[in-house]
Image (cartoon, rainbow, N blue to C red; front, side, top):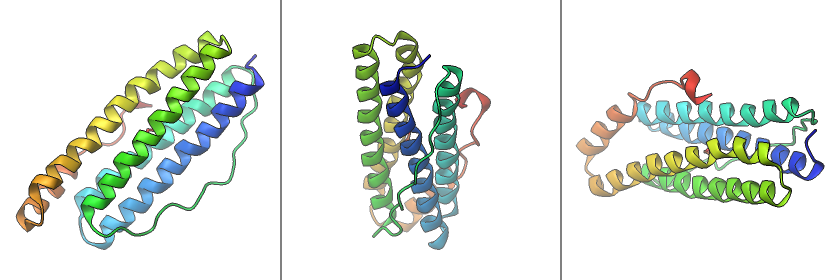
Amino acid sequence: MINKKIEEAINSQINAEMFSAYLYKSMSAYFSDINLTGMAAWMNVQAQEEMTHALKFYDYIIERGGRVRLMAIEEPAFDWSSPIEVFKASYEHEQYITGRINDLADLAIKEKDHATGIMLQWFVTEQVEEEANVSEIVSKMEMIGDAKHGIYMLDKELGGRGAVSSEEE
Ligand code: OFO
């Protein structure tokens, strides 16, 4: 049986992951609106991945005999001043999520909940990847600057991101 503090913290993380999906869908809609369809597709895959994260936590609570509580999802940002601002915002968001995962891992240690600690290891590793992916895109965009050809090529490259595989679920 899962302890109440851990249950509450993971329920809050389900909300944070669902918000991440919502945020990335909003970013995808922004890119669709300015015809950067590759970036829109990349953000869509990112949103799907966030839903798999939320569901991993959801399933974990149930598996441990706890009670899932779904809470209201905050409204995400709607508009950004440029494509690079979107990826910078995404990078900041991922750093925030990493902080939350680390806090959860600290709580699992404090509560001596080893099973939760092991489950969270996957997320600790995943966050390294999440931050690295988006930080690489920010760096590329900084290199490209306002060069239209560069943006076109990067949009094409990002559009090639595959859908979420079963290993990521
Ligand atoms: Fe779920 O990793 Fe991003 O937010």
